[in-house]
Length: 128
Image: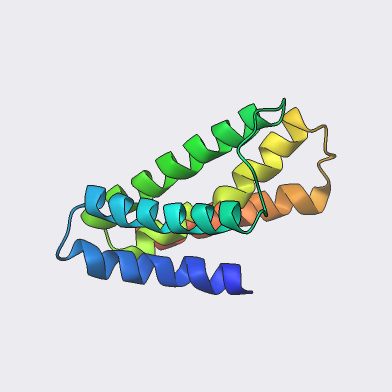
C-alpha cells in the first residue's frame, strides 16, 4: 500500500519541484537519497558490493529505473501530473506481456482483459 501511495504522491511532489527546478535537479536529489540509503545498507552490512551472475540484471534494472525516472520528470515538466502519471501507470500491462515472453508466465483471459482495461483507461485519461 505504501508503494501505491508513494508513487501517487511522487507525481505531485515532482510537479511542485519542477515548478522551480529542472528535471536534472530532481535526478541529483534522488541520487543523493539513493547514496544515503546505499551507504546505510553497506555500513549496516545488509549488502556488499559484489559482482555475480545476477549483478548484470541488477545493473540493467538500475539503468531502467533511472531512465524511467528521467522520463517521468521530463513528462511532468511538459504535461499535467494527472495525465503523465496515469499513462505511466500502464506499466503493469508491459510487465504482463514481457513476463509471458521472457519468463514463460502463462497469459490467462483475466490477464489479457486486465491489460486491455489498463490500456483503455490510460487512453481515456490522456485524451481528456
